[in-house]
Image (cartoon, rainbow, N blue to C red; front, top):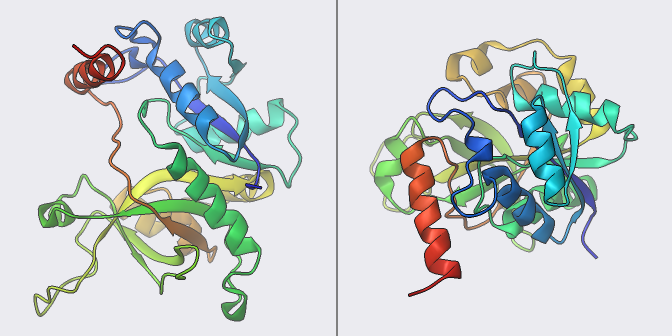
Length: 266
């Protein structure tokens, strides 16, 4: 039986490149509802909640049968919105939350399961001999196109030895740069893209909120580095993933076309 988690999806109306994208509905349903549907397909997810500061999003989500909670409009990132949501939902310290992005309507359910497995299997002692006690679980996917390793818009992760039976490793560092650096141009170097999904207990989430922003986090503009800089461990499940988020109207139109071809083939 899969470890159980609550999927919380932060969603807001404000978006510089694509205003109100959460409510875009050319497929017949809002973008954020597609994310809810995918989250609900994960075997580990027992409940799906959208955390939003917009009544329009709350109404849209609830009209499609999903749960929503109203949060403050002052949050600067999804993590703090999740922390407030956990309080509003009165979730216990040991409840596992998986942070699913509301602009990823094609996220594979296996990716969500992978993030939760990374956290829970790591806590369960897969790496017990190394005293591996992760505060966070996330996912990495092998990079096949080497040009992507040099793309600063694609976040890379360097990891310890990947545990063979479960495909889980300890994160060593995250960067927008190409890591590891391939000094001798070896054909055997492997690069991994960080898939931006996180699983953590409510207790770990609250602990993160008490940490100060850290130098590497600010330098790379990667909030997950705050965990590492403050001495917390991150477990990474290695899984294949091809989905991507929707940041622009052009990307949304491409998603709509894929959706129509899949559901209404000519």
